[in-house]
Amino acid sequence: MAKVKYYYDSENLAYTKIKTRKRIKFGYAMLFLLASALFGFLIFVLLINTPYFETPKDRLQAREIENLKLQYAILNKKLDEIDAVADALEERDNNIYRIYFNKAEIPDSTRKAGFRNPERYKILEGYNNSQLVLNTTKRVDKLSKQLSIQSKSLDEILKLASAKGKLLLAIPAIQPVRNENLKHVASGFGYRIDPFTKVRKMHNGMDFTASTGTPVYATGDGVIARADNSASGFGNHVVIRHGFGYESLYAHLSKYNCRPGQHVKRGDVIGYVGSTGRSEGPHCHYEVHKDGKVVNPLNFYYGNISAAEYVVISQMANQENQSLD
Image (cartoon, rainbow, N blue to C red; front, side):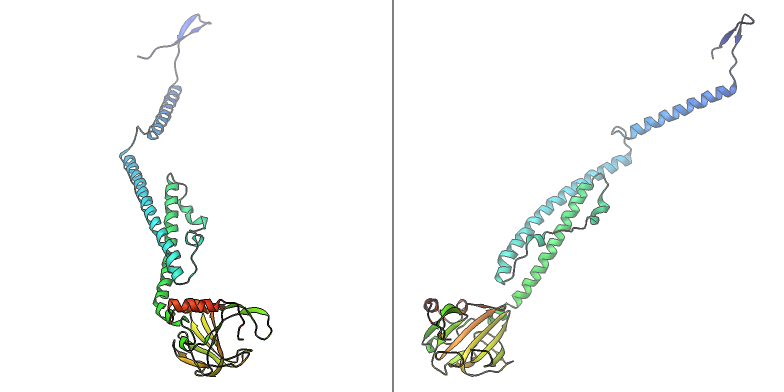
């Protein structure tokens, strides 16, 4: 039962009953209900943000998130294994395959460059586990690019391997004059005394002395690039373009046995020893060029001489004497 309230009326010297208006009562009731609703909402918000109050959907999402974290951890372990395999393959590629086929190695800065566009991963940012997903995605992208570069390198090696047989035939691998026809190796590659000026200068080939008319052989398969006497000092000379960056030159010939554009094989007679041009006596001046640079022909005589013969020729060729041209 609600309490009855009175107030003292000093004029009438009596207690008068206080009558509450219905409008005020309704206002109090609404204020109470609003306050109760607000309090209840605050309690609800607090509860749903604590681990002690989870809906079935929340528990399901939590399990899925934990499962995804586990899957990402397993994926990263697999990426570690793939990285190790890729590194081993790259090492063999650089230090075996590419060296064997005379190709420059691919630096790590190129193999493992990854992607430098920061906008590429923008869509993965702003989530609770963004860093985990971001790091894993970057690793996958980096490995994908790494494997793409390795695949292209192996394609290149495969092409070189298929052409290896042609390369072996093209390399100038024998002497231009047979040992039984040689008087001696007059001069080798390096600094020698010029027979005309008596000044020490670079001798870009090897001089093989033999009787005039001795056959001169193509040292590797190729195409005759020139057979003329228009180059200063060489007299009658032949240039063979072997391919793969190799060329060979045979100078001071008495005559030719070939023509420009003709295909020749290793061992074919292309001319004969003579003393034309700037020459001190009958001999064949022989040069080997690789990628436009002159190289020591002595490094290529593995096709028709024994180890003992190589040692003898090497000793004679390395003596700093007077050249014949």
